[in-house]
Amino acid sequence: MLKPEVQHFIISHINDDINKILLGKSPFPGISTRELVQQIDGKKRIEKKLPNWFNTPGIYFPQKLNIEQSSSELTAAYKSKLIQGDSLIDLTGGFGVDVTYFSKYAGQVYHIEQNEELSNIAAHNSKILGISNIEFIKANSIEFLQEAKDNFSTLYVDPARRIESQKVFLLKDTLPDVVSNLPLFLSKAERVIIKTSPLFDIQSGLRELAHVSEIHVVSIKNDCKELLWVIDRNFEGEPIIIASCLNQDTEERFSFKLSEEKDLPQAETAAPEQYLYEPDVALLKAGGFKSIGSRFELKKLNPNTHLYTSESFSNKFPGKVFRIREVAMYKEWIKARQRKKANIVSRNFPLSPDQIKKKHKLTDGGDDFLFFCTGNKNQLLVIDAQKVTQ
Image (cartoon, rainbow, N blue to C red; front, side):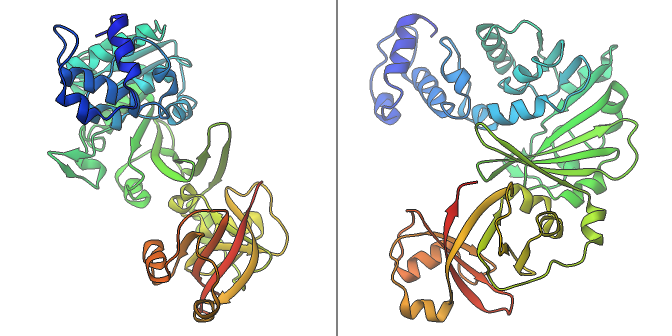
């Protein structure tokens, strides 16, 4: 599969219909069409997610599910800055993206993976990428950890959140069970980092886990990707919640504590002013709704409408900022509306964006934004706005 002629075939067919390729015959003896398609499909899937892997010749790709479950380079790079000490063990090594970035900051990294084929693939790719400080071990991670004589500075685990095709919503139900195994983890490492789906409830996780020092809510281009639980062996106290909004070349952070959020008064509500602020999804997941308004001196349109407004421009807001052009009552907008194309946003409104587009025959796209929301007097509003480049 790694011969130059096979690799050339994969690259030259990267944009072809893989279903059509499946119907054809493999041009290479000993390599099936299905194997070729796995490599073509795998390479295509990681083009934006893992550009270094995409641009490196000789990378071998596992099954689609393993690629889908792997971190992106952006989130892996972010996590690598959370580790401490010189040794790290990854209990759920998988395709090996996270350990590749961990290896930049830790002198010795251990990749534990019980799937032998996946372990071999990760080891091969690591060699191709020129990394020499990762040890690949084929083992059950819990059994390996129980028998390990050495301790580690940081332990990382990304437990499976789908067991026998069923999604699980409690940390104790993941595989491995990070709740019952947390004492074992902390006996072997001073710091434990647990990656979970952003769908996991923060309050529920705090009830299940001890010694949580930080919770990182990570988004990429306004798409929430990961929830990271940083657990320190000797930490006692209230964790800090950090919403991190990542783009290719930028990173914006917003941090707060739940007690601070609770003690703040409700944000002042107001009719839309000159500017409209839409928080990044990481902030919305983190739940610092009052903290956002207080920190940036903003007013809310409605206690349950997570949109903010101000008369003067607030710089460095972690999200999108818009200049308001026109505000109309929803019923009046229906009568007078002229736009046929706009980006539709629905916040605390009876209709979803798709329902709005269908009902009012609107085409999505362009530079114009229409916000359908509930205002400070519980009235249904339509706000015509234009995005501000910060």
